[in-house]
Image (cartoon, rainbow, N blue to C red; front, side, top):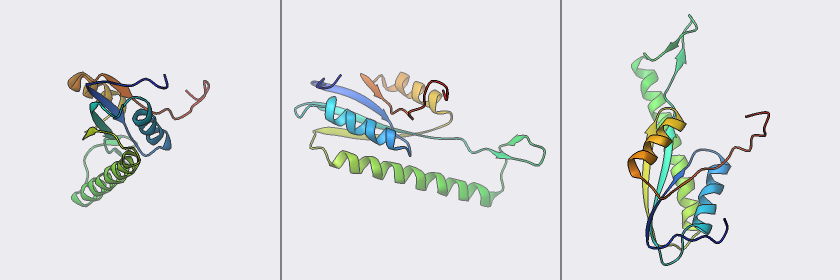
Length: 137
């Protein structure tokens, strides 16, 4: 699929996370899907997992003390900021005319990605692979 370029106005969603694979997918997208004369909207989608903590009864709990909630929210925000800064660094290496939007979702990644694609109706969805072989999948 190398050399394929998107012309005119298009929307591309790139799912990003902490992995090198997602940054490689973003780089690949910028190199292969966006031409210099296009007016593409690039949507960087990050999905935060829902926080789950296990109690002494070995049951998943969603009720936390205020301190734990604040700490988890801060960690989640720091993680989002870190991933978006890495994505921006990748983006800055390319001289493209692209509008960048950031979307942060929360929940199961596959559900949030599918819901976002349904809602935004992009022309293309780009995701990295974690490189799992047949047996690990």
